[in-house]
Length: 240
Ligand code: CAA
Image 1 (cartoon, rainbow, N blue to C red):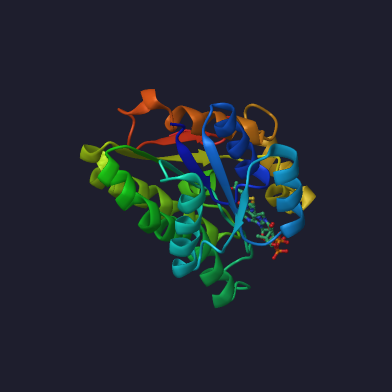
Image 2 (image 1 turned 90 degrees about the vertical axis):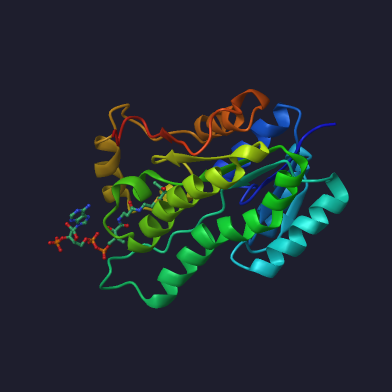
């Protein structure tokens, strides 16, 4: 039986590339999305991958959404927590709403989706969870106290849950992408982005497929000894 995966934020950007890469590995994929119906419909038409709408920041919606996917596709073996938003601004300009939305979605979403899927993986003795963090959670970023805090939290979440899943065959890892050529990065003011790219040793933005390749490695059958780790894919922008 094919493994079943859920990719949150799986119809656009990095998530779309992850959904496609997992499908190419013979995995049955469900792509979750929260907002853009039109893009989700086009994604499903193009790829044949079903899209399911719910907000990962909503705990009950995650439980219900996973139940619906499992009823149609079978138990979830692989969770990719990719859904994320930005509400950039310096602390002086950032309101509490912008803080809360980013924490609830980017970090709360990981908790909500793990609550919905981890118990089943643990019972069945096999699971793969990959959380998409960020270079900005590792190094910080001017104008992103909310996003950097949430993404940094993801790295701690990953290491803690990895310890809980290890003896049940459930691995939990993170990927920390650098600046990737997606809609999210395109929203950064061009002059600011040019200065950032100038500091990337590889000299360009990354591609979504380059992140997806990391996900297929970490979710593979042969990656059972890799857990609690963070794979940085950032063109050399941040080395530590
Ligand atoms: N370090 C130090 N100072 C900085 C700075 C930096 N990195 N960036 C800006 N400043 C300074 C500016 O020089 C300016 O100083 P002066 O007033 O003395 O001239 C001051 O801060 C204000 O800068 P802005 O005019 O840019 O301020 P703003 O309020 O208009 O915008 C901002 C602030 C929204 C944070 C804007 O700078 C911005 O969008 N920055 C990019 C943030 C970013 O990289 N986001 C990543 C999004 S993609 C992503 O998150 C994906 C991922 O995982 C990588």
